[in-house]
Length: 532
Image (cartoon, rainbow, N blue to C red; front, side, top):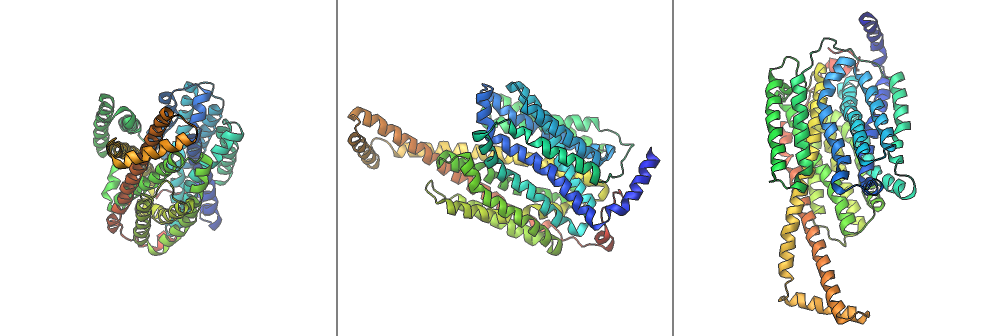
């Protein structure tokens, strides 16, 4: 069997090195990545509908999202080992099968508990798809073209969140919400067929030892830490529950680090962090992720909770920015191949940071064209900076460690996204309370401005036919609602300012991104499927 696989691998080398194969492989893995990311953005909008269908409480329905996130975080660290053991192509196809199976089961769910369980199955496939698809790209694309390839791959990462809310809103309003899951089945089946017929397998490592302690400790760490981040704002960061989760997470993180540094075949090779370029690229990518998710998380709050727009309208406003990002990702990737990462990341983070700060000055009555324009400018910066930062580090990783490095960078990115959302949410809630208290004090009964506004409201309501008593009650409610909205607006603005400064903080770190000088063999490398 091994001899036959060796012959197949040898015969595939010529095919894999052809000009056409690398771009065919890129197209195949983009389908899986797009499907995985699109599914997450589709379900976010459908949560209120599921609450009604399953008669679920807020605490119950959140596990549809939290369970998916936790399962992804736990499965990503083991993808490198599985990829080396059973083969990257096999694992990619297996992940597609698991993902569409979970999607089909979610579409048939009959209760809140069943859909939570089926979402976990779906997450196992989705969690494997992202790092494995990146690993395939790094193996089949020559070093001097990886920037362009990852820029094209990044189109899926940006287009899916943009299409998701609009598509989800349309399906929920005019069709059946279960189609949000069933839509994955035909796309997944096509991806499986293409992967089976077009992708070539890589050489496997049949004598790998499974790092059981590393798997257990990383799983417990990811579960407890991500769960604490997801529920910290709801339960309270100082609550015994959250403190216990964080304590357990830190204990098992220490166990994991000690084990990985001493294991001869670690689940995740932490020694890769000795590579300063890889380390800085992971840090910068994490900062970019926080900035990216800050916009994805905060902008809908501004548009829906304050401006009163529907999810479909919100998606349409955010869509142009995603298109701009999708356009500039391959442009940024191509420029990376020509001039390196440093200038692109500096310019990109500067644009993202300044654009995010500018959003922090918006008001409830801000013109939609202005919002779209600022978001499009941010999209340019994200497109220029995100993939070059990642590629710069991965290009310094030995080919034999690509699968482990991809898993390592993806799990850190997953944690960064969860941490960013949790931290920004905590900041927003704290600032909302702060501004609410300040506005309430200024709107005291002794304030001349307050008295004037109340009198004008009462006069207006009386003229509309209300009694004086009703007018007083209604004017108090109107003013209270305005104070609540204004406090939320100021809090969102403050949070955007924090997210903007986080992006700007990443700029000095780009000085550690040394330029990669290609050797002749690097330029000729076409991804032969061999692990040298």
